[in-house]
Image 1 (tube, rainbow, N blue to C red):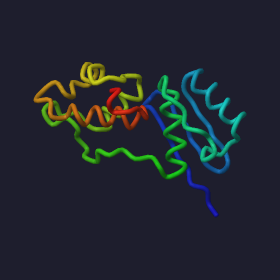
Image 2 (image 1 turned 90 degrees about the horizontal axis):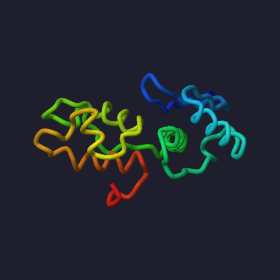
Image 3 (image 1 turned 45 degrees about the horizontal axis):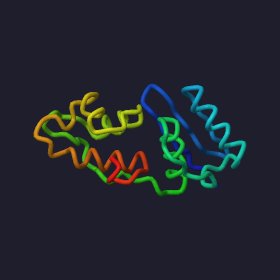
Length: 139
C-alpha cells in the first residue's frame, strides 16, 4: 500500500512533509526544533501528535500537518477570492495568517482585505479562529 504524502507550508518560508513513515521539515530553526521535539516525544506519525495552542507560525504548521494527517483539516471559506472590493485571494489571507498576522487589523494592513466595504471582515475573523484554533469571541 502506497503512503500518502501530506504537506503544510508557508509560501517561500517553511514546509512540513509527512509520508512513508517520515516527517521532514524546512524553515526556521524554531520550526525544526519543534518538529524534532514532536518526533522525539510522540514518534514519526503525526496522527499521534497532540494539537497544541498556537503561539507562532511553527505551531500553525504543526497543527495543520496533524489535522491533515487525521483528515480533520478544513477551511470553511471555499471561494478563491475573500475580499471582492480589494481583489484579495483567500489563499493570500491564509498565508498572511500563517506568517504571524493574527488580528483582522494586521491582515488588513498586510493585504488590504477588509478595508473596502467591510463585508469580508466576519470571514476574516472566522479564518483567524480556524487557523489559530481559537474561540471566535477572542479574535
